[in-house]
Length: 237
Ligand SMILES: CC(=O)[C@@H](O)[C@H](O)COP(=O)(O)O
Ligand SMILES: NCC(=O)COP(=O)(O)O
Image 1: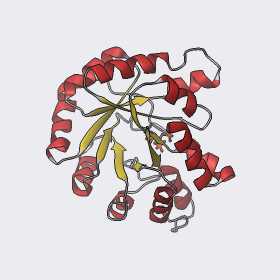
Image 2: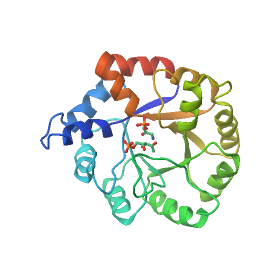
Image 3: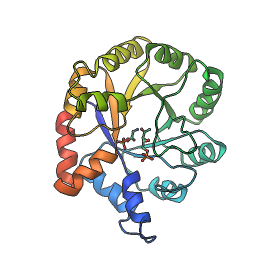
């Protein structure tokens, strides 16, 4: 079984559109858990345009499933993660002006930097994952950083799959196999959806967890959160 962690950034985006507290992010997370999701993911960005640092603090005491905090390990982010102590931190090399995450780590160039940051989180009992492209060199580099997990960056898969390209998950399956051989656990995320998740799950071995936000919240507008989550859970069995 692969765990579903729901990224609730988009709930916060909707709330922020009016400046009030509707929809309430904590209530949404509780409902998502009650509908069967096995985790909640947040990706606070320095401009707090969706999930705010305070949301992350408010969520921690009420969550009953796995809490995953994603982001670029700038000092402010690192301090927040060490304060909140989630089950997992996912490190993402976010560019300053990016609309959303758009690249994995260069694990060769940043090996010593990642080693240092990862060991700091691990010292505090926080599992680490690093966001990487489906590139075998980057997977080998990731293994050298001491990270517990990698998160395969799936945007390219989602684009290729939507175009009907054959073997759209091939590189991901090979990288997951290699990562497993190297002792890493495997997560995946970005642009996964009800259209592509069944194919991805069947094609890619050793998948511990997927984090899904943008498509899942969009699908829930039409199907409702409960039905949407249950459909994902069916595909991830
Ligand atoms: C790492 C990743 O792929 C997701 O966290 C994605 O970046 C979500 O962030 P946004 O909600 O800001 O698009
Ligand atoms: N780590 C990926 C994530 O949390 C959600 O990405 P997306 O589904 O919003 O593209």
